[in-house]
Length: 397
Image (cartoon, rainbow, N blue to C red):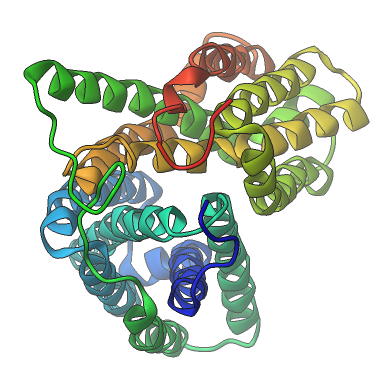
């Protein structure tokens, strides 16, 4: 590295992007904690809600796939500004929805904006990290988690105070627009997305293009597996503890609390570990730790040991996804954001599929036994961790 201290514009871009990641987490959490109130107001039955959420997820995937080529063409800063604005304004839709149809349309816009922002802000994060003397990607994802916590607390507080949904969502939307106006000018402008140097890396042969395609698939499969395990932990950890150990709901909730806490803390610590030992080590040893956690969950009949297992899952999974996304953004092609959007799409499918797979297996076997699926997936990720060693930035070991 030629310098150990980044220039002021780079530091400002990093702080501004922290705010954007936090905003994404906050807006998503505000919607999630208000799902019961919004669906009751719109007259949506639980079965219909499941279909609407699936529809929103499909729109998010469309947003991801659209954002990749657009970010490559117009720059991640421009797309981040557009997507964050759409997401902030789209939050108003569910607050004013009064029928299942209007709620579905509102969630379509919200999902599309969320997916587009996921890709564009991570593409900008790769751009900022490339100008930094050390890895910083995981900290961005840690800010997303912190934003989710703040959004949840805000939603809980306003509901406790009996604020109208319109007011709660309007204030959150205004915060979003103000954050965009403040942060976006400080992000880095559009430049080429080179592997090295200042010129875009254009594959010289068909084999190179095919090689990049294979790497995208490999990274997408790792993202699928890791986010599948994350989705399983988020949706099923408390139910697994309650069903296996027969504890009350409050005690069972400690499983998800432990997982979430260590996931957030791990994201803020993973960059330093990555800088010292490399991205491959983060993915390999992190997924092995997660596999150990799932192994404890499967084997344990004792509450402290089971909670330790879910805590280890959070630690292990915390740093893996940021390394995958960084690798996808540094494959050396001139379409870095498009590459990321494809990896994102596969990862998001895993996030949705994991809980559904466990739900299906729960009808065939004990829920605890079904946790062997994410355990096996984590072992496969550890075996294939070398796939993230594709970035020219820094040293991978």
